[in-house]
Amino acid sequence: MDLGLKDKNAIITGGSQGVGFAIAQGLAREGCNIAIGARGKEKLEESANKLKEMSVNVAPIISDFSASTGCNNFVQKAAEALGSIDIVINNVGGATPGTIETISDELWEEVINRNLMSYIWTSRAAVPYLRESDSGRVLSVSGLSGTQLFPGTWASTLPNAGIHGMTKLLANELAIDNITVNAIAPGTVKTEAWMGPRAEATAKARGITPDEVRQAMADQTMLKRLAEPEEIGDVAAFLVSQKNSYMTGNTVEVCGGWAKYIG
Image 1 (spheres, rainbow, N blue to C red):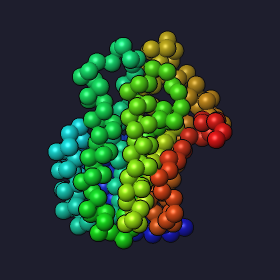
Image 2: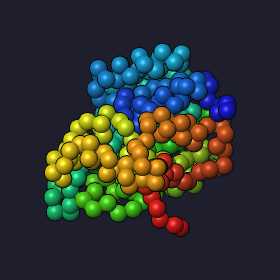
Image 3: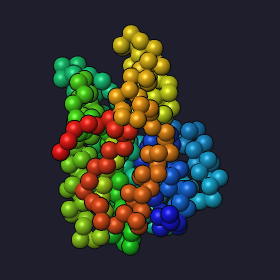
């Protein structure tokens, strides 16, 4: 299926690894040009080179998304490098476990700025460019903790729930410009984090092995397996494509059947 993404221009925050890079690859497979932003220069350039092998234009931009100035700078540089912006992918985040008593004021500020405000700042900076496009799209990556209870996940639950609220509000404001705004909530994906340090840290906390952590995650799904990165990238590509012209303000869970609620 031709998704109509060839020669469109997309910007992706946190796009050098994990789900962000999987989405970048999904868009590049459809012929979409990409600007990816991240803090680490080496990983950013490595990922950009992989995307260039897919015969699309790629702009790697070193960016700090924890402040509005960094988000604004990324959007401006991306627009200059690509010539325009049709698609915005918000994908900055990180899991920080804790309870209401253990998360400090300093950590709250860091988490909210990185995991929620970066989405708002980046989207705000990109709106003028999206209004000039005939195919404006915004897609924000959240997580299942924004829709259901996972004890000890204050620092991801509140930002993710905020992302879902932002998605509704922004979709309503931009509908008049025919710009769709959606969110995607992946389950556990075979990214560098879950195949390495995140699983190791979780295993240490639970007193089990990393393989047992990953198996437990898989067992929570109906499909009894973790997601391959490209499975997230392909769904994301559809959500920002011309084939998805009537879905807006929604959060799409791509979790292998982890979420089992009805209604």
